[in-house]
Image 1 (cartoon, rainbow, N blue to C red):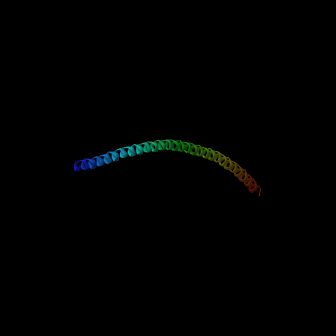
Image 2: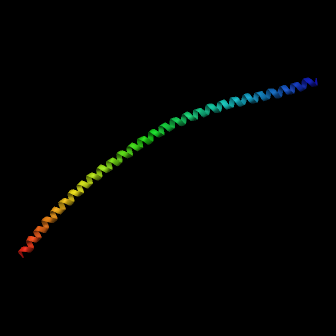
Image 3: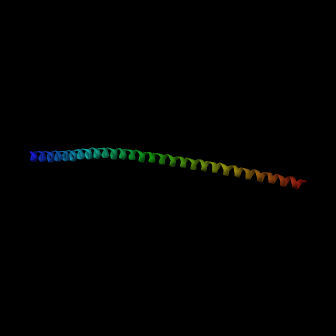
Length: 103
């Protein structure tokens, strides 16, 4: 009878050990599946992030180009105004010279 009890106890312990190993394997498999899902999700999010960054970069480049064109237009207008003022200044100096020569 003692032999049966001893073998029974050993059998129960071995059975519990095997169940623990099986349960750990299932748990590990589930964790691996979840990690794969997380990796896939991160890859998709990374691709979206890269696309968004490229779009923002394109917008910023276009905005800078527009500012440069605006600055060029403003510079031409400024140069035109300065040229016109120089012409007016020359005309005024000429008229001053004529007026001073008569008096």
